[in-house]
Structures are given as C-alpha cells and as structure tokens.
Amino acid sequence: MRIDDLVILGRAAPQHLKNGRTTICLGGWSYEHGFIRIYPTKVRMGVSRWDVISVDVEKNVADTRNESWKIVGSRENWDYLEDSVRKVGRVKNSDQRREIVTDNLTSCVSELNNNHISLGFIKPQIIHKMYFGKNDQYGKPIQLPLLESYAKEWPKVKYDYELEPRLKYSCEQCQTKQGFHDQVILEWGFYEGMRKNPDNLEQVWENAQFLSDEHEIFLFVGNQQNRRNSYVIISVIRLKKQEKPTTKSMF
Ligand SMILES: [Zn+2]
Image (tube, rainbow, N blue to C red; front, side, top):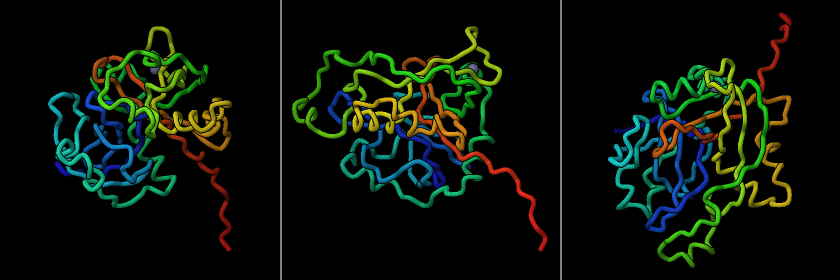
C-alpha cells in the first residue's frame, strides 16, 4: 500500500532491537487511511512532526493491529531506509493542525480500548500531575550483539533512562473506574530534553508547552503491542490557542 499523505504526529524514544538495531516507532495520520503506526523506522529519517510524507508500507505479520505497518523492504534496505520516505509537504497552518486533531478526537482512552483502536487523539480535561516515575527497563540486564559499540553511540535509548516522564490526567467524561489515566510519555523529544538538561528535568514540561497560557494540549496515544489494553502517550500535541475573533473593520 502506498500512503501519499501521511502527516507525522510523533516519534517515540529509540529502542534497541534484539539484533542490535536502534529503532523508532513513528505515528501519524493520513487523510486517506486514518491513523498509521510505522515500525521499525530509523533514528535518522529526516522527518519531524507535521511533515507530510509519501511511503510504501506493508503489513507486519508480527503486529496484527489495524493501524500498524512497516516500510516495504525495511529489513533488506535498513541501511538506506530513509530513501524510502519522501517528504511531500508540511502542515504549517495551525488551523489545519487543529482540524486534524479535533476532527479525530476520542472522548476517553477507554473508548479506544473498547473498540480495539490502537491510536487516537485525547483531550486531557484536567491534568492532575506531571511527574517522573521509575523506568522499569532501567538497569535490567540485556543481551545485545556489539553492545560495547552501541553503548557509546548516540542516541540514548529508552532503556538508558532511570526515570520516565508520566502524566496523570482525566478526559472530559472519563470512563475509567478511577476517573483518571496515568500514562508514560514516550515522545522522543522529552528524552532528548532529559539527556541535554539532566539537572533540570522539569524543563521538559515547559518545552512541551504544558505551562503555557497560549497553548492547548492534546495527546496522541497508542496501545502497546504486547499489552493491548495499556495505552501510552506517543506525542504531546501542543496547539496555539485560537485567537479570539476580532471585529473586522469594513474600511
Ligand atoms: Zn478517560
């Protein structure tokens, strides 16, 4: 299948595959095909959020979720995978960005889960807490080929971080029993922020415009392949608040 209009919404923190590759999960939205997850992709793909790309994808037998795809030839052409992705545009206009999000909004993560939908947009109505939790992967023994060379190599992967950013929030009419969600944020930018500024981790919240009066926060969430009922935040979508309509002068 060819996707010609895939709007990049976010890239998760890098992970190591067992074969030693460093991979990134990419999420996006297509006017024609809806929500799309592409995995694996490389660290350097030359794309960023709101870029529009054209790419040939195929189903991954290891991942049965409707929204999941892999780039055609991603195993054989790994070294040149970025050549399989063509940037065809960018969603620059903030109204257009807002339209993509609000036209595809789900009221609660539980609704995605109940309908077995693996990706969606959520509007956090109340943010109870922005905090750092313990990263369960950290410090666990791993076996990787060529680990020594990988350890020195940029980028850091999720495994390398002792802490992980988390968000506790409620949707507008939250359907969970406890009335809130408590999810890990996997957006790569947060981890890069932590790497660059280890003495001031809290800066990541400011970077993502959580503290800004001029921005509105939406969450791009997705479930996990091995824990389909468990959703994570792939990307924090920060949109400039709509300006109040001004009275236009006729003259
Ligand atoms: Zn909810």
